[in-house]
Each structure stands twice: as structure tokens, then as C-alpha cells.
View (cartoon, rainbow, N blue to C red):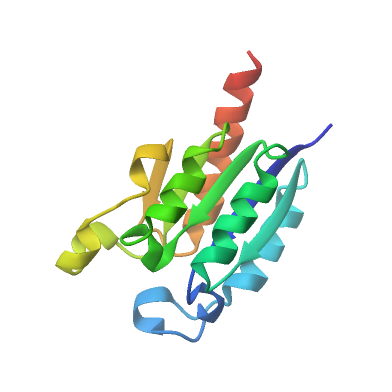
Amino acid sequence: MKKTIHIINGPNLNLIGTREPEMYGTVNLTKYLDELTVAYSSFEIFIYQSNSEGELVDYLQKIRHQVSGIIINPAAYTHTSIALRDALALQQCPIIEVHISAVSHRENFRQTNLIKDYSWSIIEAKGIEGYRIALDRMKEFLEADRN
């Protein structure tokens, strides 16, 4: 049976490829993630994006008993959402946090990370390639869990 990975993206990530290309690049994130689902066909990968904090929380609650691993880019909610943090605390699987830019080197208000305590790994400043790195790392976590 395939392991189930959910890639969850927060606000404004649906615009990657056109939004601030000097920071986030010009490759469409949705298309890139669709290509990753093919390249990592040993997993069953689901992709979800919402600009709404409540919808992200609802989604995390819905999947919590049917997920092997979560890759999440909470975007701006990284710095503001206690609700998202609490929803991640309910998970009983590896969680990998991805940030396309170097958030730890950006504005002061981005220095607070409410999600990090529940992240098994944090990948930042690798562009959208960070999602591929996260899938490789998730594979390592899930294989180690089997042993």
C-alpha cells in the first residue's frame, strides 16, 4: 500500500510563477507540484492550497487519520496562526515545513515561526525545488519509521 503524502500550501502560493518573480521565480507552482506527483509515484500525493486559514485548519483535521506525512508551506500563516499550529499539533506523522524564500533572513515580522515546534524538518531558500527536497526527506523519514 502506498504511503499518503499531503502537500499543503497557504495564502498567495497559488500565484507562484507570476507573483514577485524576482523572489519566487517564474515557474508555476501548481504545474511543478503536478510533475512531482508523477516523479514520486511510489507515494499517493494530494495537493491542497487555500488562502483561508479556516479552510487549512479544516483540511488538516479531515486528513489526520489518513496521512503518512505532511509537507506544508503555511506562507504568511507561519508567523500568525495559532489555529494552524494547533491543527498541526494533532497530527501523528512527519511534518516538513517548506518556504520558497529565505524567511529567516527577511523582515522582522517574519522571524516568528509558530509552526516550527511541530516540523520535523524545515527547508527554506531553495525556491520551489524545496518541495522536491521535502519529498526526498519525507521518504527518508517514512523508510526509517518502517525499520
